[in-house]
Image (tube, rainbow, N blue to C red; front, side):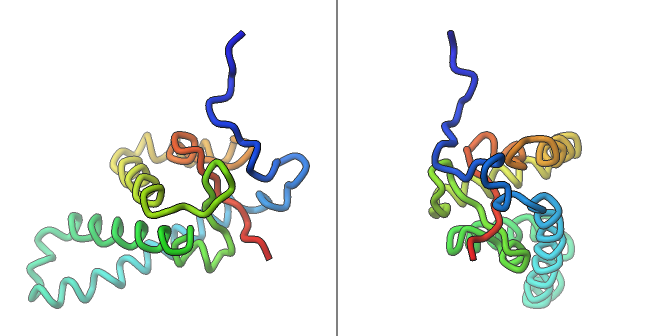
Length: 151
């Protein structure tokens, strides 16, 4: 009587008939996250130095702002952060297209919000492990999906 699917995934690769798009993506996504955290930390160093070390007093806020800008800009300009690119994965919207700047902003906002609470962060990571397309909370809300980059 009612549709059980909120998002039509007809434009995305099917995980049953095209599993190569999703093979190993969850592990690659975890490694990309580690790479991105290291890169953000490296980007924070010049900010701390340029502020004569005053940024150390608000380091969590600086990390949040630098991390947000890094994720938003890199996803908007290639549908993947540098860590994702190193791991050969990319984000796609519900129609299989790369994310535009607005979609990248909302994906980054969703990621940032999920990182503020451990239970939400763990829930999102858990969903990546059990959903057929490896989608976290933000992905499910926006209809985005992480896939292996096309060769």
